[in-house]
Image (tube, rainbow, N blue to C red; front, side, top):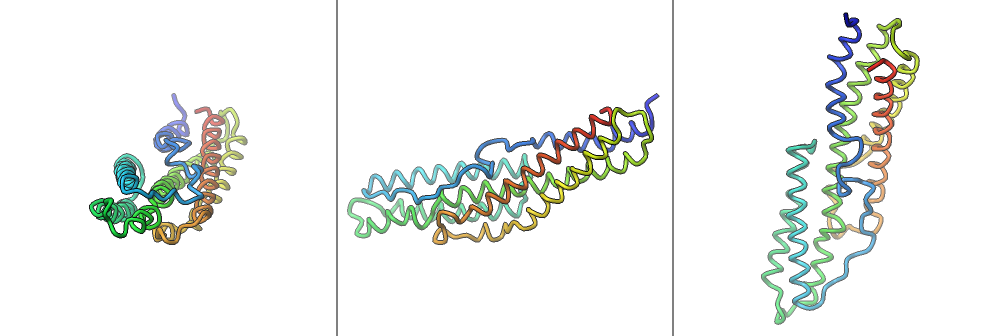
Length: 242
């Protein structure tokens, strides 16, 4: 007959760990990884009407891709409805502005040079809007992982207190869970210091080469801590014979 603690382990923890595994220990794609470099130089400003029209077309296509990424993250991932709405608002405003320029730009446009310049400076789809989408999705994903891993560590830690023997390495499991708690605390502290509202409030005119460096670094650190915590939890499970 299966011992009581093993039954408790199966019922209380494995479901949580399956959910964590489903999310993935690493980001699903490079575009959602905060380690993905963000542009450090402004894009080249197109000059002719044809170049400007193509630049707008390319950016509108990128916006469509980003909207799809937001939709997937909201329905299949852990992007909150509030954050999805905020991101879609930023992209919608950019789409409206670019479409207006698209209808104005022509070889006879009296303000062609200024209009072409504004494509790069007033919207910054690649340098700012795309990273805002990816970083926001990453932040919400990591917040979710903190909660799920925290639940698993709490349940496993409580369980180890009821076991007196019959497992491969009880002391090893306890040590792994203690380290997981430390890693989770570090990740949680980093995420608490991350200003999502500040990130979403950034306007194209505020962009400069290092504007997102701190945000990227913070999420990379939190992700590394959570990856270590997940490894600790899996080790604890192995030490407990699961």
